[in-house]
Image (cartoon, rainbow, N blue to C red; front, side):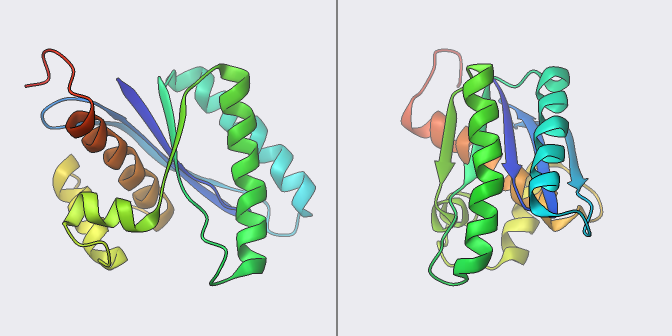
Length: 163
């Protein structure tokens, strides 16, 4: 199964494509930078266009996102929610299943601690996927949510041949 994790943002969106296996295999990661001076509707249109191209090229079987938590920064959460809406629309258009995970679930799944730091999560992403060096935080977050889905699917819904 090819899982595309997306960390949508109104200025930078990270993505990471991971394939199930023992261990999971990194296929591709990257970031989409949107024009900082472009008004939000234009950035959302550009995000839609570029993510649609990625979906056509990468052919994931599942899309996954981190849930937006609006309590801490409501204004930022609104912009993130709008960017997530673009991903929701693309998922529906492509007929792809979409899953969301709470940040504490991602941390718990990858590190064993639901209150782990971003650095601890990034370390586990790099270790699991055999990445050397640093990846941009947005791409790391996208890879983290993709790995979370793979690990939770493996644990909750075992498939024949998975081990």
